[in-house]
Image (cartoon, rainbow, N blue to C red; front, side, top):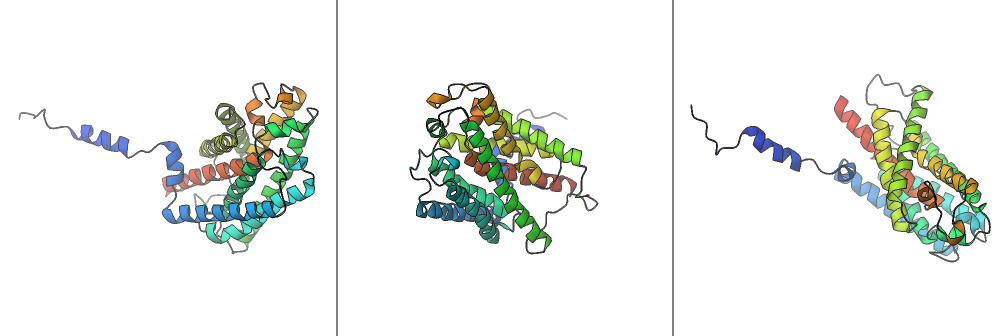
Length: 307
């Protein structure tokens, strides 16, 4: 029998189809959710952003938009922190009406997106340095990071309690015999992996303090870090991953406090300088949302593999 060389073999035909069927990883993160889930998260995020901006504008937080520095540098720091907490907790509760069909902590994702609007309204990090007189400003930023992180954790705990009470869907286990109480060392290992990978991503992606770059760089870094960390250490729940960006921020701020660079001109130097180009609000918003997205995606892929 004579083979016709003009006819392509099945492997030659299948290979281009396979290549075309595999989209880039960043697109797969979002396309892993069905249209209804994307619509719910988008709607909840827009609603939280509108409510956050309305609340900030009504209370004049900040007094000088786009060049305000940090929340604790405002003339009324307690009011500024209160606005952020109300936006986080209130936004998470309200948007859970839309986003609870995705995950019980979907409302937290939406609230974090809404908080990004406040981060953009505050302006880049250089103004926090311009408003300071000593490197002690980095201790102030570390304190603000802790306060915002506490608000994120509180909002998550309220959503988790609502899920345990049957008002929101519980997280689906990858295996019917999966023990939710995994060893603590595995959870800490997952958090450590999240911290290291997020730190590396921020160092490469956040080269200026322009707000769009800091928010996008943090979101991408945290989401890819959570995706990889959960793939190798499949711990749960999500708190072990979205707390990673806060630790990264504190590490960066403390490093600049002990080894300050050209902070007086608003341009920190050093290996960890990119970490300090992002403000605490950036980590609380883009860092939290990115880590949640990466965690959800990895969990979904895990369920598909074991299903």
